[in-house]
Figure (tube, rainbow, N blue to C red):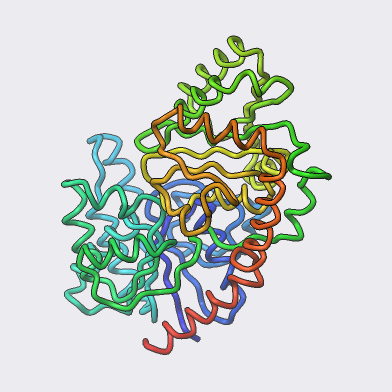
Length: 396
């Protein structure tokens, strides 16, 4: 039986969704967590290393088994808190021992800044005696961090060391080549996996998209997210938003304050979407997008945002920043709008058009529904992913 070792964030829904695509294909699957945390409840029943750092959900992960490899992680977490700095060397050491002991046929690092760097460290410790290594990047892994002096050399080292490279966009494939990758490329696929479109239908508001009276905003405001710009743009459209509600998900404290003031100033109700459990998170979000006429996602850097895909699947008209790979999915002004992330006036103009043009948003929903069926459904993505791993494992 072929053995695949994933290196990734065990608490991330992206990791869970991706591994679920191949969990029952006859391969032995192992997961090496890049950091301590909680196992994502959507993670399928696989073998996960180092149980002392995780609190598995006994219902959703009762089939997962845990592999004890070393007490180093326990000491690492203690020392990290005492010294207030990461002890990545311990983790590299343990990963190298795992690879040496379990001899996986393929190591697949999911994401660059944690999994990619960690895998590179382990490879250096093994002096070149390393399995086939595939790397898949997420979000801003290359588009943003590849331009920062602290990260660029490390990214170049990873890209010149791995055998296969996969991304969510053709844009990032070009970036990887420019940064030194010379290996084989994997199919361009969403890192967040596929959609069960039949399940998604249950959360769509009946009727036409133009009849919906909610605007949904991605609430990230951090090194990349620009939700506050989105709120300023919506304030500029307040005259057209009477009778609408604004829903915000993923809001941090700054956005919560701004949203409260926005609602006071404009008299437009604001709902803060907060999933109370991991189990319900997907359905909460799907329901919110299924009620939305317009979905806004803004950041100075991104890959293929899951929120963009959720908007397309659920019929909401997507307004997405031009610093993502949205242009590989959206024809501007046809099935969505692509805008600069920090110009509220241009974003407001796009919102106004989407609020006034019923025909456009209804037609966009039809186009995006077809795209979802062809490019986002489990029937479209799963066979490509299984075929990809079959080819990778033939080469091992």
